[in-house]
Each structure stands twice: as structure tokens, then as C-alpha cells.
Image 1 (cartoon, rainbow, N blue to C red):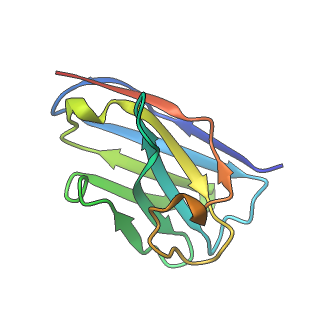
Image 2: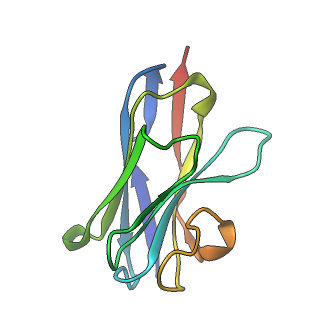
Image 3: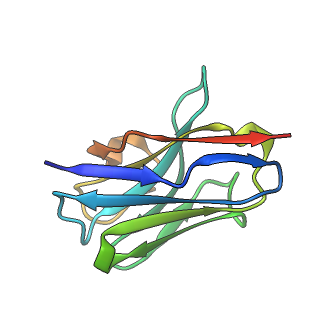
Length: 126
């Protein structure tokens, strides 16, 4: 049974930082695309960042480039999303996702992913 467990969410003031973790189990972690998405109330789920676990290539939405960094610890089957300079409008539920298609294509499209975590709330206050 595939499980993706996110942690690290919480509340932070605008300009602050948080680091999300996503631990994978029951899944062929290596050589697949792992992504981060977010969904604010009333809005569509959007891709934020992704990493190809086979080689470490990373992908980012334009809105987070230079502020967010995704990384991996293959020994722990865990990916991370370091979020700096958070903005009030980035309050959302953040999800990690795991693909089964090998390398990321764009890394930011929903169709690339088969498995999803339960989500972790990030609240950014102004």
C-alpha cells in the first residue's frame, strides 16, 4: 500500500519560512517524479515544485522560483519543500504526489501523478 505522509506545515507570518517533508512508503521511490502541489479554498490545485528522484532534476512554478527549493533524501525515501519569503496569498493545503512514469515531464501537471498524500495546511498571516 502506497503511503505519502506530509509534515511540517503550520502557521507563519508573511516573509517567514517553513519546510515540508513527504515520506514515501510502499512505493518504488527511485527514478520517479515527486511533486508538490497546493490548493487554496475555492481554487484549483496547482503545481508548485517537483523533483526527479532518479537524478535530482528540479522543476518550479514561476511564482515560487528563487523562494522555494525541493530536495530529496533517497535513503529516507523523503522529499522536502523549503519555502522561504512566504506570502499571504500562499495560504493553502499543500500536497505531495508521486508519479509512476519515470522522469518528470513538466513536473507541475496533475496527470503526471498517481499517488497523493493527505495534505498539510500552510497558513501565512499578513
